[in-house]
Length: 131
Image (cartoon, rainbow, N blue to C red):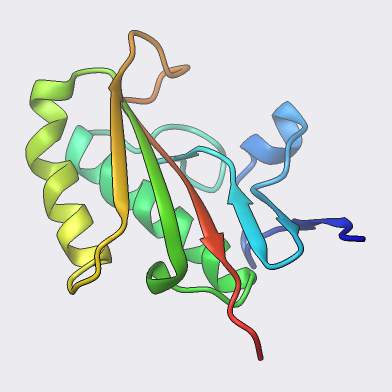
């Protein structure tokens, strides 16, 4: 029987404590990562869309690393975009950096009208590698 285990990065931003959620939960060999936004350490949004997207991917990387994963272990990606047209270019570039080679992960992108002051959010499911 699998148990759930909360995963936190080495330097978590303030939103986890402020809103009462875990950055990720491990269940067996699967890692379910909460939506990552471009939050600075104090929980405030990084100014600028490109910078928010880059920081969101950086925050995601930190959570994956805390679980012993890399972007190569990601099997499912969902992204939420307040302004899909403006976000498409920087989002695609960040995806190319995170997933530079085949096989790339599957991706779903959804246009939304609110992300609590953020413009971009990414959540993933990853398989934790066996040691």
